[in-house]
Image 1 (cartoon, rainbow, N blue to C red):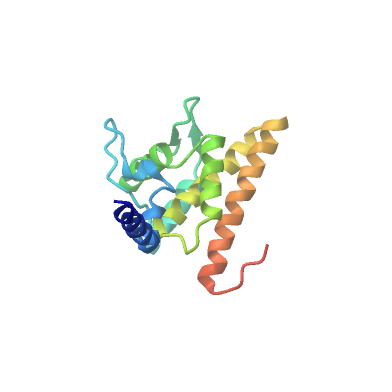
Image 2 (image 1 turned 90 degrees about the vertical axis):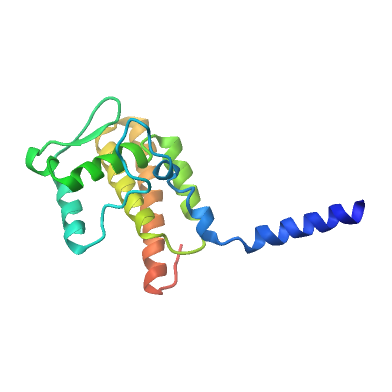
Length: 173
């Protein structure tokens, strides 16, 4: 009976060692894979799939955004807010990216331990989380400003590290 247990443990260990890192990446933004019932958000939404959509995302970020007390993000510009991609932007910002310090710290720690490159949607969501952290840093005061600034810095370092890896440069500390 003991050798069967040992064999089972060896098989489990071998299976765990050969699992692709793609499976572990889904934990960066778990809300993207579990949409809320009240939301019409598609499973694992992506905002940018063309250059025009990247430019539109940039316009959304430059437009005046409003964050309500319950941390819901909306675009103040009615014309931009009426676009189809604006609803996807709101869904990602409101349902996918983390908005609380413990969640952002958890994301930063996961990003720091990630061995490969970020997937396009993970990079996009991390950049949006970075923009949100920058906004919250600007609005905060005292100790809260320091906490948000540290979160902002750790997200920036994670994105910088990913960009350096993707360009083939050596990552320096």
